[in-house]
Each structure stands twice: as structure tokens, then as C-alpha cells.
Amino acid sequence: DAGVIQSPRHEVTEMGQEVTLRCKPISGHNSLFWYRQTMMRGLELLIYFNNNVPIDDSGMPEDRFSAKMPNASFSTLKIQPSEPRDSAVYFCASSKGQPGTEAFFGQGTRLTVV
Amino acid sequence: RKEVEQDPGPFNVPEGATVAFNCTYSNSASQSFFWYRQDCRKEPKLLMSVYSSGNEDGRFTAQLNRASQYISLLIRDSKLSDSATYLCVVSTSGGYNKLIFGAGTRLAVHP
Image 1 (cartoon, helix red, strand yellow):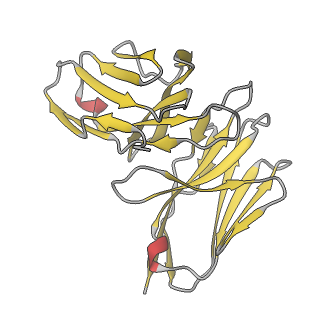
Image 2 (cartoon, helix red, strand yellow):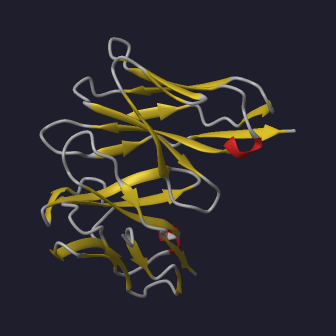
């Protein structure tokens, strides 16, 4: 199995630009998570999908952030417009969805907004 | 109050030492618990699940205290390769598997 695949691995963009992060979960997993990690705040859950439906988006910082999961094998996290404080590592993870099952993480996207 | 709280450390210990980390969680309805390990500039990976009766995997022992809402991880005979950040993870209930991570405890094992 290829694991969770994220792209790009690194992204440097200018303030005000739109940024789109992509994730392909493990086949057969029906839960998908987007996390953001910074030194100050640790690993924060942004949004959680189950069977392609957003279950909890209470962690999405503000309206500039949006996430979609059009099908079971693809999800995007979009930031528009981006700001320097959005600089972080964004992780996507997937799991089988049943309570008690572990989540597998992608390698992350390191975003720098200048 | 954060849902999952950990001492950020760092814990600096010599090789061969025994070290213990604690983690507290706020949601009494939480169902599942895990310890993840994260190496520098890498993604988190599952270290072990935490069961109500406690469980052991080699040098690692995890314990759960539901009454006090805390989880512990004990590492015996520390190795240099154990140096990493250890993340406490709690899964909420409601029929889903929403995983909330603590900020992590950093461990540095020195020769």
C-alpha cells in the first residue's frame, strides 16, 4: 500500500495568494483528517470527514480556509487568501473510521507564506 | 482548557534510564487512546494503543486511568533511538473516530 499521499511536499507562496493542498487517503479508509502543526500550537485538528462528509470543521481557523472531499480517494484544503501566520506543516491522515482504529499520516506539506 | 494536555518537556535522560510521560484528557466520554511517536521533520506514527487493562510492548508500557482521566507511557532502558516527540491521542465517541492530539512531550536520550 502506498500510504497517505500528500502534495506538494513544500509550498512557498506570497501573502494573498491562493494555496491548495492535496491528499489521497489509503484505499478502503473512510475517515480523513486535516491537521496543522506549528511549534506554538502543536498538532491541531482542522476538519474531519467520514464517508466524504465533513463531520466536524470546528477547527478550521476562519473563512479563508475550506476543505472538500469530492470522492473517497481525494481531498483538498484551500487557503484563500493566504497570510504569513498560515505558515505551518499541514498533515492529512486517514483511518478505517471505526472507533479505536489508528490514523495513518501522510508526509505533510510544509507551507511558507511570505 | 485543551482537550488533551501533556508536559512539553524536554526530558533529557541518559541511555538506560527509565522515563515516564503523563497525559490528561478532558472529555470523560473518550473511548480510545493511543501514543504516537514523531521524529523531527517527520509525520506522526502509531507507537501503541492504550487499553483499559494496561499493555506492554517490549520496553514500552502504557496505562489508562479513566477515573482520573490520564494516560501514561513508561519507557524502560532508554535507547538513543528513542529520542523523539511522544504524542498522546484521544478518540472521542459519538460513533466516529475523531482523533485529538496532545502537543507532545519531547524526549532526548544522551550517551
